Structure formats: C-alpha cells, structure tokens
Length: 184
Length: 184
DNA sequence: AGAAGTTGTTATCGACTGATAACCAAAGTA
DNA sequence: TACTTTGGTTATCAGTCGATAACAACTTCT
Image 1 (cartoon, helix red, strand yellow):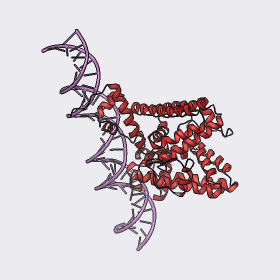
Image 2: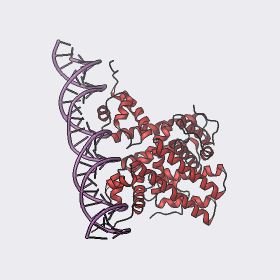
Image 3: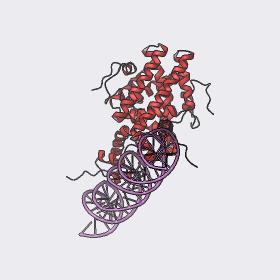
Image 4: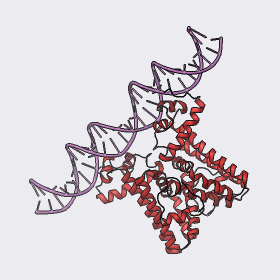
C-alpha cells in the first residue's frame, strides 16, 4: 500500500492534531516525537524536519489548543454572550478532554522560559476574549477562570471526563455543578 | 571533608525535600533522579537504592506535598476555622510556590495509573480536611477549590509567586484578589 | 580486635531519544 | 524524456537516564 502523499501544510496540521493527543497524555518531557509520528503514520525524523525541534512541535500543539478553546468561546457567545453560556461551552470541551489536559501540560511545562512565554500569551488571549465577548467585570472573569481551572485540574486527575475513574464522595461534590452533562 | 553520615530515615526525608524542589520545576518525566541526588549531595544510585524506583520517589514527594498543605490548613483552622482563613493560608503558600507547582505536576502526571491513584487520594484528603475543619457546604468548598486551582495554575505559569514574570494587564486582574500579599 | 550491619560510592550497562545525513520516490515542468 | 521540486524514508549517532552490581568506609556490638 502506497502512503497517500499530503502537502507539507496538510501533514503539519495532521501532526499538530496528533501532537495534541500525545502531549495531552504524556506531557512535554514524557512524550516522544516518535509517539507523535506513529500516531500520524509517518516516520520520526520527518516530524523533526517539519517542526525543526520537539519544542516547536509542542508550541504548535499548544497554539492549536488555545485556538480551539478560543473558537469554542466565540461560537458560544454567538448564541448568547454571557459567562454562563461560555461556561457551559467550556464544560462541553470535557467530552474531548484533550484540550483541557493539554492546557494543563502547558502550565506544567512553563518552567521552560520559551514555553512559559507562549503559554502566558495564549492564556492572556483567552482572558481578553472572554472579557470582550461577555463584557463581564474583572471579578466575574476571575470567578469564571477559577471554575475553569478547577475543571481542568479535575479532568487531568481523571476525576471527570472521558477517561474518568469511578467517582468518590469528594469528587462527586466537586464535579456536580453541571449535573446535566453526560459522557459516554 | 568527610560527608556527614545520616540515618537512612533522615536521608530519605532530605531527599524527599530535594525531590519536591526538583520535581516542582521539571515535573515527573522532566526531572532526573540525578538532579534530585545532586540537590541533596548524594550519588544518584543511592537515591534509587533508598526509594527503589523514580516513581516511588515521586510518590513520596507528592505525599509530602499533600501533607504540608493539609498541615497548613489545620494550622489556619486552629486560629479561625473559616474558609477565608484557610484561603489566606493557601495563598501564603505562594511564597514557597514549590508546593503548588508540585501539586500541579501531580495532576499532570496522573495519566500514569499508579500516580493518578495516589494524587486522587491525596486531593480527596485535602477536600475532606477542608470540609471537616470549616463545616462548609459542598458548594462553598467547590468555590474554595476553584480559587485554589486558579492560584495553582497561575503559579505554575509563573504569573504569580516567587519566580513570577512581570504582570500583564490580564494577569494583574486574575492575581489581584488578595492584594495585600507581597513576595520578596 | 574483629565480626556484622549500615551508609554510602564508583563503575557500568542497556534502553531510549532527539536530531542529522543521506538517499529514495512521486509529481510537476519544460 | 530529462530536470527540478517536494514529500518522504532508512540508517545512524551522540547523549542521557534509570537501574544494577560490586565494593568501600564508618559504627556498633561482642
């Protein structure tokens, strides 16, 4: 079987998607470029050729993550520009879960100056987006992001989301704000 | 100069402290056992001998982190058993910062089943401690932990805390709840 | 003093990993 | 058809890392 040839741009997009999946589970240091390559069905050296370094691949995956969260917020605001609407939209992202854990792995890797810089810029953009879309106050947005970070941490801990472990009493309490949502 | 000999137990405690420092900056996969060893002034193989594996060393560091946060809460409740008191105490932990970033690296490493199990147990214990000490409702505790996870994420991003980068407009908003606290 | 247990070290290894180099093949293009 | 560009691969390497083995030094007990 001859592999379908893609343009470099198409292949990069595909690799970024694979990178989000891989990095969201193993983190920056804990994921190999070979894992990403296999996930996309190409050889490991080709991944390096397209992105130069592992770090740039991670940064691209991070960028993609922030972009998708940003787009989710914009889509939600399009229907109803309130914090509640955006909150539900973010909660819906749990069904993918990758984006949240990827975001957290970005935080975790922020001890590296280059990565930290990128992550802060991306997170700042999300903040500005939320405030611009909803017109909320700084205090309201702070509460909003606090909720979001709790969800993000719980998802990373596998307390909620697709790969969640059975609920304990404490995790049921913390996860129960939007009881309507289901994962299957 | 002859190295001071410690008992195995003393050396383990010292190594756990070094492990918290090292892991809190590099995470599980991103930190080498040799880094921990150097931080404590012993050889790398000896670290492995005392903890058997890198994973057990990480679990010990995680346990220590949760224990110290738990103790911080108990000390705060001793003075005034309210969520506000505990919140200020947790905020004070920013001055060390290690504990928060270590906690986040625990979340991040939870894709590993053994680590995830340990982290969930520890986090659950913190939840039970907070509820028992303050007698707060599930909703109140949820808001409390949301605040805490926001702080934890911001600290990992180096937006607040000891090694923080200069504040941006957005990060000033998110960091400004307890304006009295100073880091120097 | 000497045996025994405890606290460490140095030497070493096998496995892994990111990155480089060189080459191959498919597809336009003149 | 021959040439050039573009999309890929295989081969390989230098460095790193966790872990094991063997040994050395200090303490304690008899």
